[in-house]
Amino acid sequence: MLVVVVPGLAHGLVGYDEMIMVRGDSNLNYKVDMADALMINNWLFSGGVAPPCLNQADANDDGRVDVSDSTFILNWLFMGGPAPPSPGPYNAVCRLDAGVNPGCSSGPCR
Image (cartoon, rainbow, N blue to C red; front, side):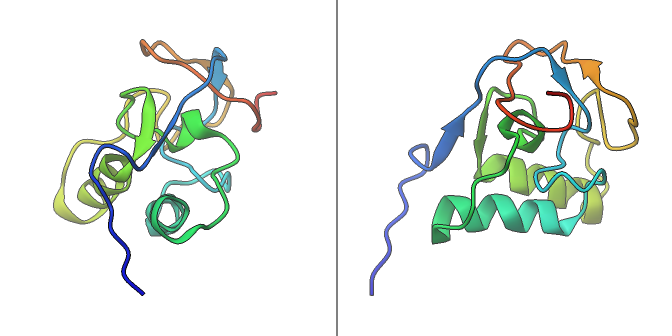
């Protein structure tokens, strides 16, 4: 079986909502770890379950969920890259998403 992935086509657009809990937490377990990056990649490339809250899975806050989000998470965790933008990995309450593309159709803040 041959699988061809065209960069830029594998992504999910983030819908509108103004509250999120933890940017980068794609599996909604209230922490950002390798499992979040794996969930994103599994959904994008292997037909896995979509993240329940796309806005939280949008780790780099660019308004869509794609491989750059899983890369962003792994870069932060293992390479000393920047943390996901606010509300970031250590947030514990629902907050307004100040990004230009807020969105979440389900999750801990709905």
